[in-house]
Each structure stands twice: as C-alpha cells, then as structure tokens.
Length: 152
View 1 (cartoon, rainbow, N blue to C red):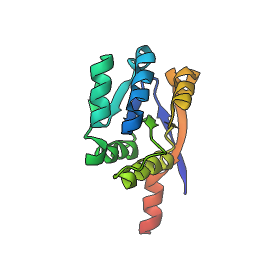
View 2 (cartoon, rainbow, N blue to C red):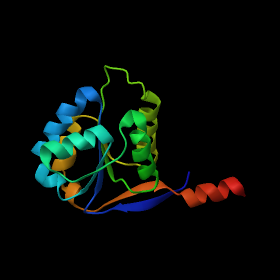
View 3 (cartoon, rainbow, N blue to C red):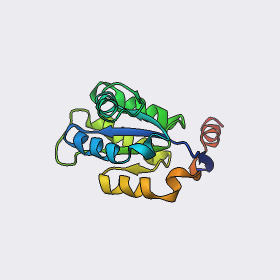
View 4 (cartoon, one colour):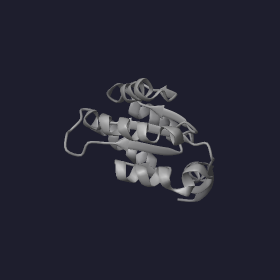
C-alpha cells in the first residue's frame, strides 16, 4: 500500500477510552496530567468521558458509551483523521461483550498509524515525550491511491 504523510498538530485531538475495571486508573492518570491534557482537545466514550469531566473538570467531547457504539464513533474519527492519539486503558483479564468493537478500534488506530497507549506506563511516556506538545509527522495510508488502484 502506498503511504502519504499527515501532520499531527501541537494541539492534539486525544481520545480517552477505558474498560470498566480500568476507569479508576484512567481517571487518576487524567487528574495527574490535567494541566497537560487541558492544552488539547479531548474525546472519550460516554461513561469514561462523563467520569473524567465530572472528576477533573476537563472539557470532554463525549461519544456514546463503548458498548452502545462509542468505540465505533472513536474509530470513525480516527479514519477521518480527526483523532491524533488514543489512550485506551483496556482490561486484558476480563472479557467484554463488545470485544469486536474494541478490536476494530485498535485495528483502525494501527491502520492509520495513531499512537496508542494501552496502559498507564505507556500513557506516561506519551505525556512526558517532547513530541506530546510539538508537531509530529506520521505516515498514513494513501487512501486516494488505494481507491484508484481498486477501481482501475
């Protein structure tokens, strides 16, 4: 597949997602990093976003709850180039009924080369990286080239 480039801006669009058993960990992480996160646009699945906003005062654009389609809404934003970073504290020890949606979200983040933190340690590396508050150029699939090759 051909690749093109996309610039992730200084002010990033960050998606925050957490499974039920990981919500408290993400909440603590958001509280610890509230000042840094306040400089960016934040999106979250419904329950997670509501909890973060209520407990930290951060401004969040909330989607639906994950099992009700919120994971897919975040995935759609990724495929539209509207999410720059995904912070997804997922629970590897407990099955969730919407596991196919979770896998689809992680697959889209990988396809579109979006940085993904799946635990607190990785999220800490992200927020402490000089790239967190600077522009970052990433390679993404050249969709127009992909489409042209399929229809010719």
